[in-house]
Image 1 (cartoon, rainbow, N blue to C red):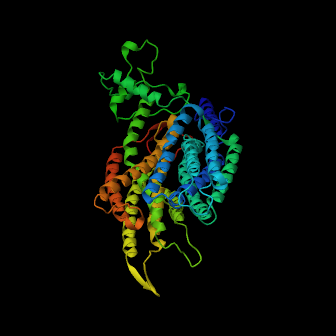
Image 2 (cartoon, helix red, strand yellow):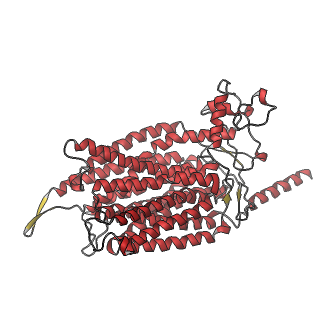
Image 3 (cartoon, rainbow, N blue to C red):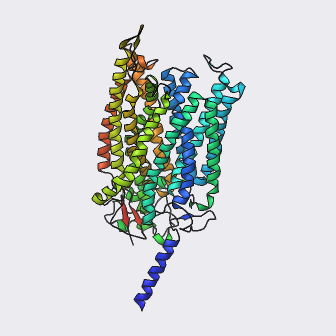
Length: 593
């Protein structure tokens, strides 16, 4: 009889766990969310929609910005490339600020709403700079130098978009991932697919931005293009607000950096104590008393920090002081943050490679024969759509074919570990630069070769089709490196820092863009001393092939360092109660009953 009652109680508890979401999230009224009516794909689709429109706007501007700066603003190649890299770098570094504010104070949902206002203000200014006569570049169709007021308004609009992106990018993806419960096996698998399909949507947006938007910019006008993306953005923001009742929300926990500082200070204060051999002797809050987040299991890395969780006998009777005594979970969270540093540093070359696709690859395409047929000419910036096609092909194959097959061999829910996936992307970035160097070398040889035509001699021009391999490989590489980095910086940071984690992912790209500008400056100064700069005033007087070879070597060396780093890496180990179990495991997850 007692056994039957125990079974009934277990069944009742499991039914309750299945009905409600107990992962510290709340619904729009502040209650425990009902699993059937909140979260998962029905909620994340609203988030994907606004991400799609934001990325169409961003890529439509970013992929063709260097052309606008050189043709309308009349900047030389080096100045234009630096301007694009500075703007792209700022755009991808601002999320560090937005992510911190969202995690500490506003929450992700309200940060997204605020960012929508700032972003739309930037798009509106950009539209006005093309339509209002006094803000246009000049009165005539073509001018040698644009008005100063146009330059001011144009760059003000661009940096408003940067500030808006600062709130969007760290919060949208993490808010979308928050719609899946990590403690529910089926939802956890859906979350792993979410990151793949998120990147799929982002690349579909790149495809639209680099083809439709860029085509309108080049053959209709920039004004019409910006008006279209402004209207699209407005409609998706309204749709996002309409999905409010379907979302699961996370309460803020205050400054996420304070607990890390507390652990470091507590460990320093106890530096003379010896580390405990038994982790059970370290201080931890019982699961039943923990209000938010999950407990983390003890790991043997960075053992010095374990001293922060040692209970001092002389202070047992004293009131708990987080600056002298930390929990094992807080210690492990600090270890996570410190272990991210070498991964972040060695991933910067990914950002450098991506930066070439938005700058030098575009000018490389502009110097080729862009005619696809006698009547159709492709805009140079639209070649970025080939990158999107590469990712759009690779992501579904990886998610639907590669992952299920690899699960059977590795027993890992992800198929292959996150860091292995990133390393494959980094290896492909080496191949990208090698292919780009070979193609550019051939283009330069063709450009200096004269061919005899009827009545005249002219220089031979390479077909733009030759650039397809480097763009395609770049897209396939992004499906490994960028998606892997997104998942890494979301899953391997403390639960209270997930917006900041996504900002760290974006900072890899941002710092990578700045590094790209820095390399351009250094290479130009060093090679310019010989009288033949690798990056000259125009692409035909430059030696971009040598610059690409240099990047290939740098990428290869950094990949070797990255492989050494991940060899000793320990993944985040959650003490997780799962509603269902199967044979698969996740990276660094400890299942407990």
